[in-house]
Amino acid sequence: MLSLKNIVSTFGTKRVPGVFLHTSVINQANAFSRAQLKKDLIKDKGLKKPASAYILFTKVERPKIKRENPELTTMQISSKLGAKWATLSQVEKQPFVDQYNQNYKIYKDQLAQIESKLPPKKPVNGFVLFGNEIRSQLKIEFPNIDQIEITKKIAEKWKNLPEQKKTHYNELYKQNMIEWKKQSSDNN
Image 1: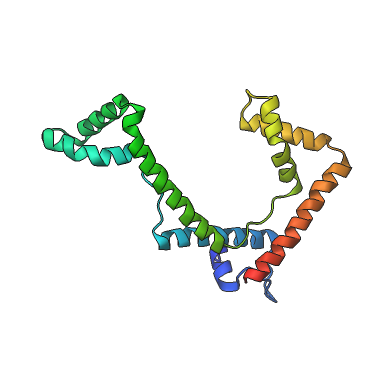
Image 2: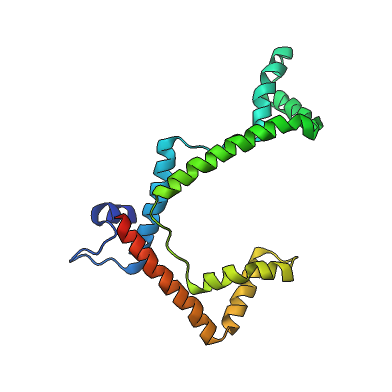
């Protein structure tokens, strides 16, 4: 049986005479190949998220605690490390926080380099464009509701939106799709 991965590896994401690939399958294949490509590039670079300030602290302090208390179990050492971290002032934690921030900046720069090698993301549809535009306004208007409720409010507003405004967002989506297809073909 051909899986989506096999279809993509066999035929790519282009139309092949005699092979019917429904548009949704092609769209899934495009999304799959972008996500897989990103995953492969990250793996090839050996890129990992940097250790947190606390983990950096434990890497320095664990050997000291182990040297002073060789009888302690790993769990007990971890407990001592957590207690010690909790008692540190912000000034004492700052070198670890600074090191984390420096490592995170390097990580983000490397991630940006990987992103630049990926094909462009497929644009979002008119409803999502509309939702992205009004979401922050709804968060201010209704500060105590969760994301699910905000999404319901967006859907309600979209449903009641005049057809002319819906057309505006859908036309914007179509323009974005044309640009995306152009960029995608330029990358192939």
